[in-house]
Length: 130
Image (cartoon, rainbow, N blue to C red; front, top):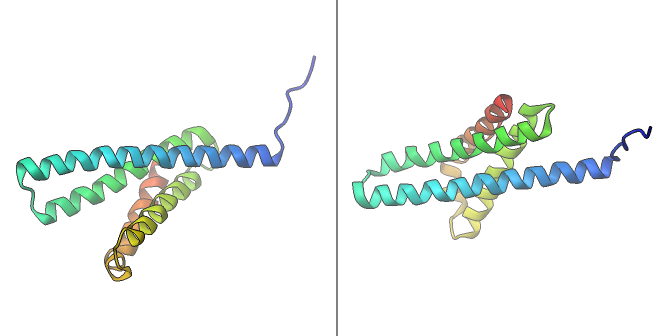
């Protein structure tokens, strides 16, 4: 009887990267869908700016929680670390796109660390539950 073949480290690393990329893609799909619902809500219900800001933060946390949960399920061990990585990567992509989309660094800096902590914590919490 043959023993199952063990994966070498390069195969494991590429598998981890693919899982993380898929989780990031999932989180951005969820973010896009929820932001479209928010736009509809703003159009129909005339939300105030404060309500919109709170909902956007909640969307970030929900998206990173879901991505962290999926990453934790897929990775199996050290789930909270994988969730933290996904949440931090989500924030990094979000910050880079915001700067290149015409936002100034000053604008990103207003809530930079708060958003970073919320995204990382959402991903880590999702990884713990995953």
